[in-house]
Length: 255
Image 1: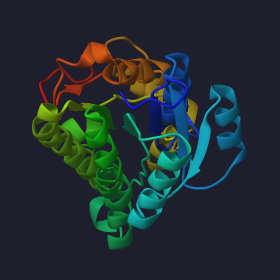
Image 2: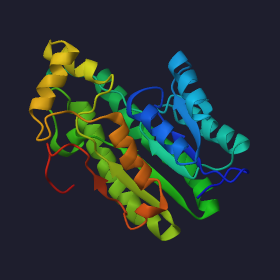
Image 3: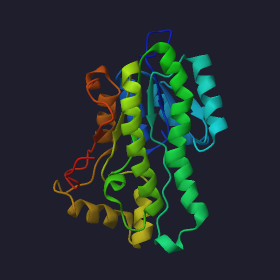
Image 4: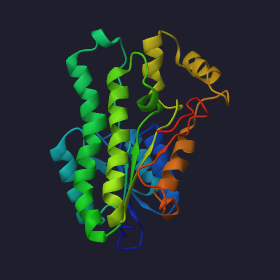
């Protein structure tokens, strides 16, 4: 793993001001890593998570390749090469297919799919210099199954699954392991988008999704973070280009 001069693995978590990213930053910090906490703009939420995990803030919109390159250069100068990348930043907008604008389509593709592309291209040279690395791509159950009114989001998340499978096979011989997490519905602020689309309160949205799950509840960010923690560790070395699906049994298939 990439090591900070103090001996700590340098982990970059994108979209880490809230939800799964926030839980992941805290978990990797608890695992002993030096966490670089990314979000697209400064905020009180970002400041709090940086303080909580004793990490380093890194502001960049992942859809902007130049911003990503500059961010990774700053990280390497301050802390050393990134040994663990968790590509989690995401954007979702919901609505009927013909009612979503082309701009809305590309905004989701640029953030979710292209953003991960920019991140991996930027951290990969450093990982190659080190001869080892872990890349965890956060996709979605909807990238496996598709979902009504979430066409662009689901398409971008399906692309991430294919990207992870392909790069997993390509990079494993170099000691760089790429895997994907495809969570089911998880209790994050993103549920507000689902609720708006359905025209119901967020709490009712939670209850509706919970009723569809075999475990009768939706996922917790900390549960997804635990899966990411495993894939970011040496314990997951036998996993190459795999898609782990912590979803409570709502989807039961290979991907």
